[in-house]
Image (cartoon, rainbow, N blue to C red):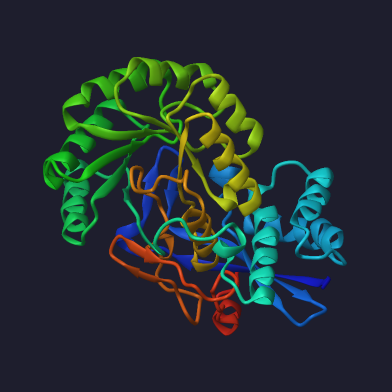
Length: 372
């Protein structure tokens, strides 16, 4: 089987008003991503998703579209979609970074493989090591304390047992917001904070210490990406486990995080790490060094969410039972673009056992919401 063509479709979907996400990086109120499909000479079609956000990874739907159409597609046409290592080699040799663009091509190849073998992708990755129903946490943005508290109460009512609060802005406002959420949600649900690299080490240590009575279950990306010394200090001088997210896009980043003893947990996901294969490599490396993994989010739609779910189901070291994942991105959005959207009820997202990624894209809806 050979890849015959790659087609791309930039699409725009707004977030639900109650799900708009403010953070130290800015406001996310609409998702402008890229959906692609890979055609093969065997008639099998694979789908992928570029979940790009300029303020976070530096990628955009239109930049990814240009890169794929003008460079990457020419590299992979003629390749066997089963030979993902060679496809990755070709893409990496031609351009660095651009993780989300590369991941969309890679996940489409996994989709093709699964459809050809009549197996779900998690079986191609070694088989399921946990149930297909996975619990997610929910993120509350940088809102006024009363608004954040009201949202937390609603989320607990919906069954969420882990809530993440965005911080990394004004320290005093951050502390007040987290305290308000803890009071509203009660003592039982797990409370996580995520600074998206918005604090320096001194601020992070002070704020985390002041929030000690809030019993934080996890502190995500407290200091800027690339500042391994700062993150290692925060981990060393504070009590809660520390997760690296914005600082781990590729395998070298994972090596440096481990080498500097920066974190207890690494957040992985196919988009951020350049594909399912590369994310799995990081997960296995982390396991060998006693570091847990979980799965974060860029507010993916159904295709990329499915890719994340298959990776979780097949990876023992993605310890979502201890560190809740973020695979409910489709529910943040005003509508879905799959004919068979993933079943998401409250905090539980269920991955299908259909062949490939298991997502049937509604191409008419894609065309109707094009932002090209």
